[in-house]
Length: 171
Image (cartoon, rainbow, N blue to C red; front, side, top):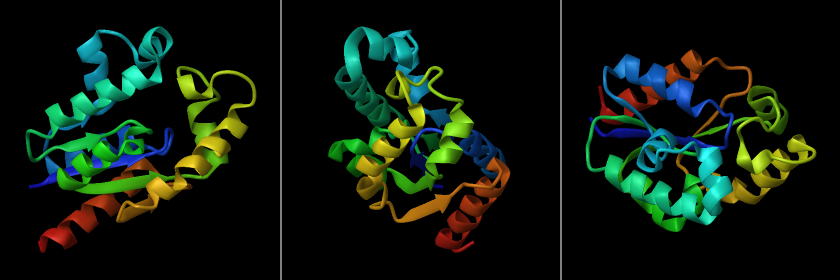
């Protein structure tokens, strides 16, 4: 089985959906953010605070390269992993890439404001979500398989991805 890669903006359900999907497919689940945290032995928030977003993005690329050396995994990426052209190519070449999406209001509801989300710190996180989503939309639109998650449980989204994967594999 090829890798199944789940990307998209924060709060769209990548991690929970990925865990459910890995259970359906009976394969390992890998979270790129967790790999980065393990590499640095620090939380994503602390990496951002101490060394900045550019440093984090370099670590993220290293983690993606490391994880993609294996096949047969469900991989969840960070919300900004698709920003770098290098990452987009790695992820598209490394498996079946899916992009989850949700409305700004749904994302805000799910992430509960800015707690632990470095890009949302400060005033008016909902407006920041709208702004960042708008900036990234054209990149997210490049992904062939897009799934809207508003009003859907992670189980429903995982089943949808599972169905697409089986159709693409002809099984």
